[in-house]
Picture (cartoon, rainbow, N blue to C red):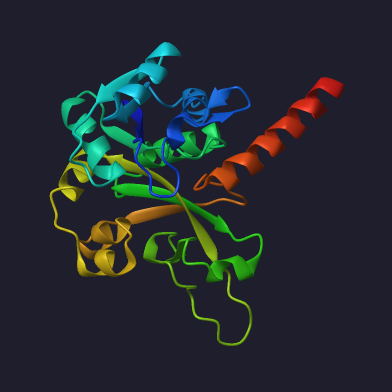
Length: 248
């Protein structure tokens, strides 16, 4: 069961145009993601999927495998599905977000291992408790609730479960997905579902069509980069870490 990690990357972003090539500590954001993905030894290949020549040329310059995709795609899921449709020798597809430069290789390995080990699971993702429960109120942070088997019951931008009494355990969804290839190719054929349109969350399309989504609940997660301010904050974190390493 060969596995491939695909990193969708586009230039256009309302809040952060050109985000994939934004420099952080001497490397672009996308370069950081690609390097950490390559450290996941469960992956047989890592592919950057883009429709932009600037991104393709930059990724090729540091040795990444690049797949050019259609400019008509409205989501990263559609973009990776185009690549997966041609990559018939891979049965496991990992969708790695191009804006998570601190993605843990161990998490990628866990997603692949779960799909290899548990045949009943068609799709897997990750979540972790909010460090600050009050952050769950933000609609920009997606929440998930799971059953006793750690399968997703629902994803929402609202704070779920509803607080009635003691503080609930809010789980922050981390936007990384593992699919069986046939599940991914079927998912993009289904039309956007009512709950998906209401919440603007693609994973609800899978749930509404009966796909079981397993959730790996980890102790902590890694932040995504949504704005230039996020990137600047991350650069400071990495710079401090490098200074500490030099002093050792």
